[in-house]
Image (tube, rainbow, N blue to C red):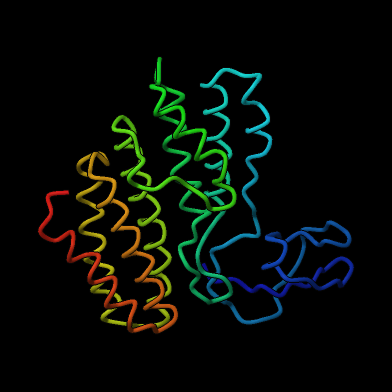
Amino acid sequence: MKIRGDRECRSCGARWSYYDTGSIACPDCGSVHSVGVDERTEHTDAPVSLDLTPVRNRIDEAPLDDVASAAAETCREYTRKRGFIDTGTLKPLDETYVAAVELQYVASDVANEMRPSDDAELYFLDLLGGADDGDRPGADEVPTELRSAFGLAMATAVERYQSDVRQYLDDHPNEQGRQLSGRIRDHRKRVEALDGDVDPANANRLLHAARDLGRFVGEGDESAFVTADNWLSGLDGDAL
């Protein structure tokens, strides 16, 4: 959405940046009565960080399903506040966001499974260990029983990123970018139609294509268009 980021408090006259606080409440007096004093700018992101330390601290004392449920909820709250347009600039699809989406899906599967396999449990714990730093296992390590969770997570991350890319393109028209985004959308819908049960390597290719779309549209990087096209060409003749 387009907002006026520079705010002025009507109660005490203090000025601050909404982009820094993510709130219309005055940081000096707490009043919610403020007014924007600049031009409206597209902005969808919020100053929020992912901290899974409290969840990790419960690993040795709580049942696995409780830990998994807490991890899923923490990631859900984080991704709900995140966006990819910061004061009119399109940001990359970063690893921390992707890891948070993946952990949300994987943790939900683990929490709902009566007896998750050792491989699934280890994968979940590995992901939980590094997601807030953007570290996640490779696509070749995804256990068979978590294929659907992984595929749906990649499709979800791509869909949310594309939503902001579309908003960005409304203000920065790029026909090649729209066509490329359309191809990514078509492959994403195929993954969703299969309930995410696709080769993890192909779901990962879709993620790479979305990242390159962002670089092409947001930075004008022509080489990113070529690499995105290559990622998608690898999917065009594949049954996923």
